[in-house]
Amino acid sequence: MNDSQKNTSDYECVADPCATITSKVQSLTKQIPVTPVVIKSGPVFVKIPVVLAEINITIPVEATITLDQPAMEIKRIKKNVFLTQSRIIPFFQECAPDTGILFIEGFIRKNIEYATKTCSIIESPNVCGDIRCCTVEVPFNFTTRINFIREPIFIENSIQSELEFFTDKLQGCNACSDPVIGHNPCGQSFFSTEFFNEKPFTELVRADIAEVDIHINPAISCIVPAEQIFTEFTEKIVVNLTLKVLQEQQVKIAAL
Image 1 (cartoon, rainbow, N blue to C red):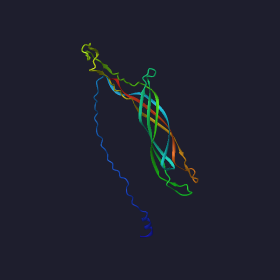
Image 2: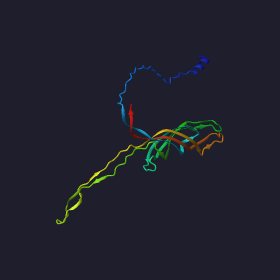
Image 3: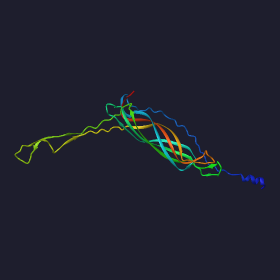
């Protein structure tokens, strides 16, 4: 074997396949239309969620996040909004029957991808590192007054009523005295009614998040002043939420 053949074989390599694909053509199955079975025409009563109010609220939030390793740069932050609690207290006063107070608690789940510095050359702008991720939850809460498009339906429990029975058979220790006339202490009758109302609930329609990240006490290199190393940063966040407040109610509709 000459030198040219030897040099050529040194650069030869056999690449193993890293992925395989198997495909199969699916046959099209014939479908047959089915006529649905419906109720007869006339008024129908259904129980469906009814929109009580739809609001848009802006929430300012400030959070300080500490990473597990020093970071050079934040590459991406994926954000999702979750609600953990929603409570509605309606007003039953005559002055404001169509308003209520909404209590909301939740958090922003943030998946932070950032670049770390693992190696560098002295007096050189070249830096190498890894991409890491950190997931945190930023809590928020607010309270606001809402105006109902349609008032919620609540039925109050009745006051417990009591029945007393008359008797003239009570006799004291003195056999010569007259019998005692009044209510019978040997038995009582009570009546009460308890109503189980539908609890209003909240749906999250839309969430818009705008934020500014500010590094806290970053380490600046004199050789490459454009690069900073930081572990802690503050987020100033503006969350804009669109919410629906609903309650299941009985509604009369017409079946045509």
